[in-house]
Image 1 (tube, helix red, strand yellow):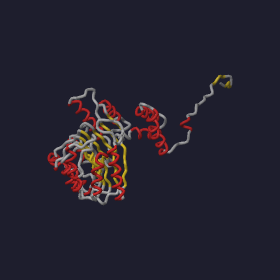
Image 2 (cartoon, helix red, strand yellow):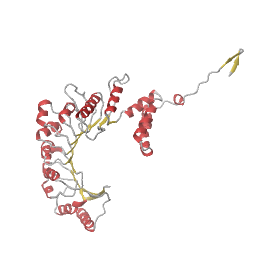
Image 3 (cartoon, one colour):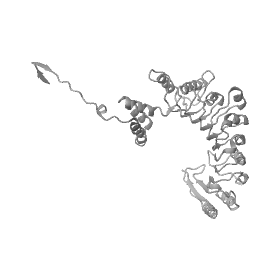
Image 4 (tube, helix red, strand yellow):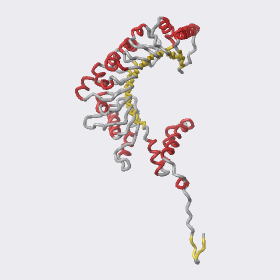
Amino acid sequence: MKLKSGKLSLAKTRRQDPIASSPHLPAEILFHILILQPLVTQWTCPNACREMMNVLLRCCRVAKAWCEVAREILYRCIPLTQAKSLRLLLRTVFSERFDGICPARALQFSPRFPTPRPDDMQLREFAELAGTIVVRCPNLIYLTGDHNSLRFTSTRLPPKYPFLTGLKVSGQDLQLLAPLLVQLSNLEFFEMHQSYGDGDALGHSFSPPTFKLSNISISQTALSPSLCKWLFSSSSQTIESLEVQEVGASLYHLIEVIGDFVKKLHIKQMFDMIVRSDLDAIEALSGLPRLRSLRIDGRGFKTEPLLNLQSSLEAFAFSNAVACNVQARLESGWQPSLRSLDMYCGPGLLTLLPWIPTTTEQKEVRELAMACAVRGIKLNTIFIF
């Protein structure tokens, strides 16, 4: 307080804002500082995802510059599991701040419902909300839709997506996904699990996609010749890496469309065994003339079909359970172009214990190593836990 001209007056004091008085940080530096925070949080907080979002939301209230950077990180990848969350996101998107355009770069739709078996109305509501959100996200880079959660119609066509390079779907009706697929000119990676579609019906209703895929992953999905042609004809000369699981003889149809340029193939197996469908897939490998890298999971397959390969392998990966068979192939001069072998060792189907080789298995591994040494092949042992 100061006494001035016989009157009592208060000297106004202003508390200095440390943020306002600090030097202005370039947006790039601020971005790296804030993006590092989730990496630290995930190791120090049990509820890492929620805590990360709370920190970024608090950053949005610090200053305009902080808000822009924090919001970019918040919208980099949005996981959505509840219809309520989808409605809240749409409300935000249609607010004055966003004006109907969502800045999300990646969306992950994985619906969860209160009951184990949701009714059709719940599924349809979630899928329609998801479709509305995707239409409002023109800058997407990656999109995931589980349990047939992506539905588009001719009356609600999505925009072009110049940046979207990755798409992953499961349980998906491809007829409902087709309006989106034809808009993805730059898609590079496509993963499809337990999905279905009628290639002839798709061909009558939609123009085929024009994307040039380089990697595809397909599991537990029946592929007809017409579906393979509609989906992958535009990528017949660009697909280099293929991953399949339990597709069986469908691999023949797929290879007829894309087989001439595939260089890398992984035949996956959910369990530590080979079921009949995978044996059918192995029989189809002769249709891959440019194959250079091959990995086959599981224990129960014979290596005899591999003698029919028309390609020159440089790398081959397999389970330790077939080491003896692989050794026999090497000693017979199979695949003279081989440069490396990867042998995967891990717990069996009914145990979670690490792999402890028996006396017989130790002998097989030693003999395989000797066969590799004779041919100058590098043997890598990879343990799976």
